[in-house]
Image 1 (cartoon, one colour):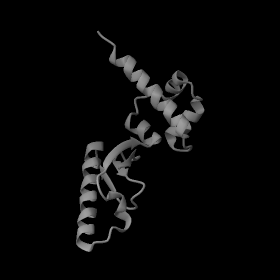
Image 2 (cartoon, helix red, strand yellow):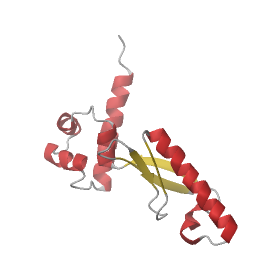
Image 3 (spheres, helix red, strand yellow):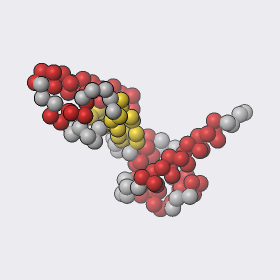
Amino acid sequence: MKLKAIIEKGKDGFYSIYIPEIAGLFGSGETEDEAKVNLCEAIEIALDHVEETGNWGDYSSLKGNYTIEYVYDLSGFFKAYDFFDVTALANRIGINASLMRRYKTGMKKASVAQKAKISDGIHGIAKQLSAVKF
């Protein structure tokens, strides 16, 4: 089973990661990697609790084999990668620039289709950049 872990970057510069299916289970840190380690430690503590009590409670998503898929909240992505000119990116991938700025600030949530369009656009740019030679 795949557990989706959402990466966010706060205004304070710290990262937090949470798994929506598991209330109260999260990791945080000064770096994304530190937050991932902290999340894994929180999972171990939760599993220790289950072993001690025999009660899965909120942690039933951790039963059996699972992998963690780390994904960005859109506004978190733009905070983590703040070198993107959001207006230029929007124009390049064919999204209304004003709407993209609202995604960036978290004022509006993107639909699944819009997220896919943004992701595909960024991956396309990355592919082009990886072919650059000097």
